[in-house]
Image (cartoon, rainbow, N blue to C red):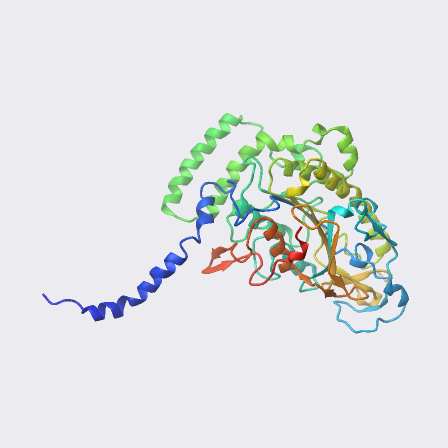
Length: 471
């Protein structure tokens, strides 16, 4: 009987397959994390190497705080008050002369770090804080800059930092979401895109809580089922799970169905624990007094209780609009905004430290960009005619970190003499994300998710770990 083809022809036709076999062996470990996730989306998992931090709280000052009015003093601005700065630079809107800060700065703590007078309580914690004065991002608009800070990309739909982290580490509490967003008075610009899971499984999307509400039934809509007991709900969910399983056997890899199943299950489990964790009356009066009974105080205390209960990532927003976006009246508005959150943030840092939680909790403070050291002109159309505010500035701004393996009492980098652009030890948002992931035990280049034929990561194809920020 004649052979269909010779050995030489066989090798010629199938030789490329050997390369595929080799590639398959190289990629065999690629889905190890996915295999672990299959045991349950919030099952606790180990990162690439031992982490310094195991949970995160991101204090988001929405709108862009001014670096030269908060944590980056620039006395040279006073010398040029009312005059043009000695160099040209591009801003989103037309700006004019140098605008000195209306606030006084003073050195605090053993570190001697200079802090604006509008943050007296945070200044008292400065020896536990690492200030980064050389941050920069790409675009001077809120929408893309919010996406960059939260999701690592200014244009495309990408998972948020909180979603990446809960995907990588799971959660320490199966009865609460792994990623909780405390944002009062509605949604910020770009809404839920700020805490989206994008192409990651839907279970890792942030759960939004409107913290302006005090009543638990308003704080978390439909937290209780008024008609069915927990046992009855369990039987209903079991039936639903059986039906969903039949459906999924015919439609493998249906991520939308899996997300829906997980949402039902989590909603059921939350009834047992959510009401208790959001009930601040269970805290001692002395603790409630330390945080304060205003909105920001309640938010910070809820955040600490969530972290204590094992939630992996909590993002706390200061306002749903852009409250720090002070194109006018910066002296009045920045003082007011700082007054709302200064005491609660300091209380949070002290409380975490007293409870021994600060060592493995990573605290992040900042907005999406900074502001210009020059005054925004009224004819630019972004203000009401008052020449007393600042425009957006992506070229240089300040953020700070605390706890979780961060070098305390340290100031990293610097902007130029006037505070416009990062000049020394520049830290891009990609670098910040790489550093945060490193503190959480992840090599940001290896921490990927395959989607549409490509391995995606939080830092895209950029970013490096800023080792000077590590303790």
